[in-house]
Image (cartoon, rainbow, N blue to C red; front, side, top):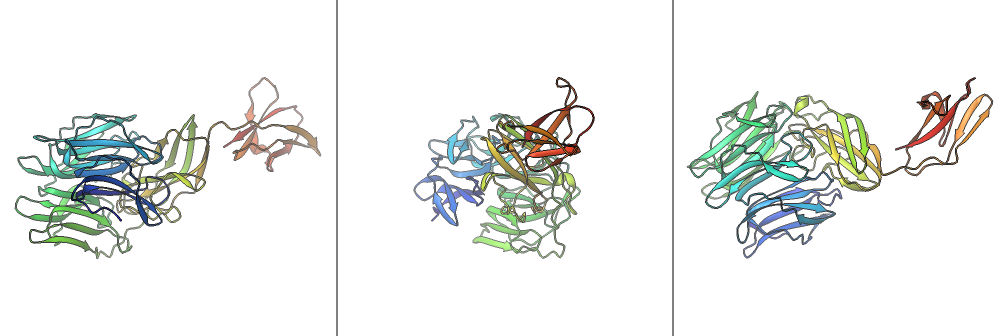
Length: 478
């Protein structure tokens, strides 16, 4: 079974790309600080002995920082002899500390998000450094992480969450915690990488949690916050009306030292709530059912999937989807890549229906293109779905394919003329999905693609002969 822990954190993620959700777990077992990965094999969870630094007062998050298709780890917390912040690179299930140079923090929060929309995951970290605290974004430039000096209040015992509350296509931030002088609860609007406090008027809390989610199915992100106000625990839902956040007085039991999450437990199309924490007179774990009669509808599927392969890098692009509730720029996107039945990048969704296994934005955030690096040679299949602000996924677009590596040249080409038709035949090329025919009247001239002027039948092509003598060549395509 799983280790019992407290002062803990946990996250679901498919680290081995086998299509099911594994567990990352940290905390204090009563005698040891631990950080463990449990591999899910048909519902049996096995400690893989990953060799991660054991931490307490911690935060963990899965994310593919190096765009190689598998989930890496961001881990913060208190260890011996002090606090740490580490990134572990996942190489086929072996996790290596990349020595990222991040400041060590505990009583911390940490999350991945592509704040600058450049196609790789950046980091947001807050926490206690000993006699001081820190809060900053670390920009990812090809795996090198640099603090942007964001100017955020330095907090610990807080919470952060990325989310596009204004549906403008970039990630904003909700940010809570203790500055050592006062509690803060702030929403920062992201304008091309510049973050501005919108003075949202949220109740200031620490020992807290915060999560974005569209509870009322109107297409924008509302906010769930729990934590200590300085006098009591609290649990508040803020409705987002065009960037104005209003406490809906939901009647939730207030908690501190808390955790809160959205999820549609009854599959009725709206977001319910799970809250845990200290009420001041006892401990609470409570599910609240959303009784709204307005269900969320799923987005349309992305369209026009395209692939560009260069050496060992592939860039995947698609047209944005639409949704009845979430504006187009508010949608995120979720990608899978597979080779035969083995996943290179897991969607953590049901690839047949689009049903999301986790409650989060898509794994490529807000972009309509994504680059994957260092894929081995071979044929791959991929698709993408849209995810709305209620975290509902569309059906995946019709699957596309691409080939990594050098494709062969057609051999044994034969050209013949029979009954007024020119027929070209050739040997099949391994991994080719189609062929193109080029022709020119001058063997040293500029050849034109005339594939559409004839008819393909497997590894042959025919078209009516003309009066002009033509020279041909055949190209294999994947």
